[in-house]
Image: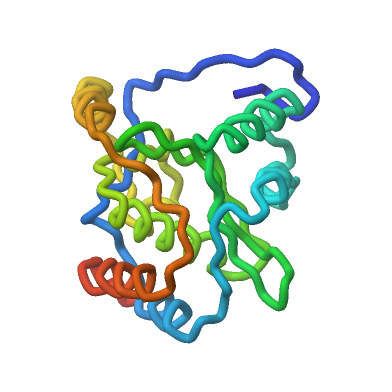
Length: 202
């Protein structure tokens, strides 16, 4: 991470408590289920990676600055070109309105950042990410930290020791992130994720 957009230095973070979303512990509200099933967003994968990173670096009312500086942008762009980084994107009439990006290594996916220019866009992107991770056979979705936004979707904190155990297991898996576009495969997995999720009333 960088301290700010204009800070040239990078530093590593190893928190005592780590944020994860259990792939079988997703929470989806009734209203969000309706949004997904109505097809409000066209969800794509890996078609606008750099645009997504730029969106994540935008200043918002809640976040005036960003930890994504120019070096991080370049490094993650290279990881994308190498096939390690991926983006999930929400589009409306060919306009990018939200999404997320992260890095996949074996059976672990490290969510880096998300953004939303339209209500529920980043949440829908995350649910589609979980769907792809389940298709692929991943076991760990690392969110690094937890926020109220992520907690509402099922994120929880675990100890560093427990995280390292889960990470070790995931890194021993021989799986590959599914970035395909087979609508039947994606639809079936998405419906399974929705059906298995915990329902919220909001």
